[in-house]
Length: 289
Image (cartoon, rainbow, N blue to C red; front, side, top):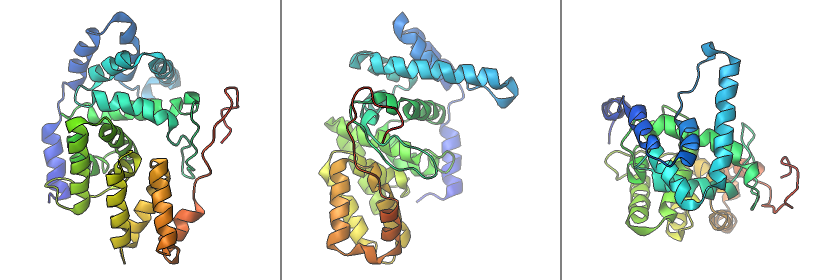
């Protein structure tokens, strides 16, 4: 397994300094009506020295682009994502849609509420996540299998482990050879057998977030095998609310069946458990959970 220093050096060697120019060339090849959303997410983020107005304009442009992405047809959205990052394009397009119904509350006291059919509740968070993903992964020759292996190391540079896991879950749910290889790579990392990957939140979130029960089974076995590894138990239980609803039910049943509430990590996770999923009327206030 790579040391942190070796992994950092390897990542620096993989970084493409000209990635933004190459992406701009791809964006120019899009149909005119698709270029705007892509350009907004490809634009260089303004620095604090450029002033609040520049930062506000940048955020407003991306917010409008995010709303536009929600309006596009599936194939149009896939074209935009492929222009932004060809290796991750299909996974990003699937993630953008999947994330509409995934937990939308954020912050230090995050509680994972879900509201089906209300993409407006998640669009702000999805906009921030997509912008961060492009900035973090744009320089690298990433695809979902690559991200499964390198996600733990990248998370040491940027607090995106949760988002990496969500993208990997969507990549698995795309199915096909790529989905199978992504699932296999995450399991390999979880087993500690991957030549590059290290265990991290992206592994747990990816396996629990997917609709594939094989990922839930593996995570359940990790939970039961944790024994004195309180950190691993805590990581799994505190990520359960980000998972597929079926995975959350599985983990909750495991906690009850095996009396895991005798462990401090389980009590902590239970005390910060999410509220129930909800289905809101179309005109409900955005802050309703």
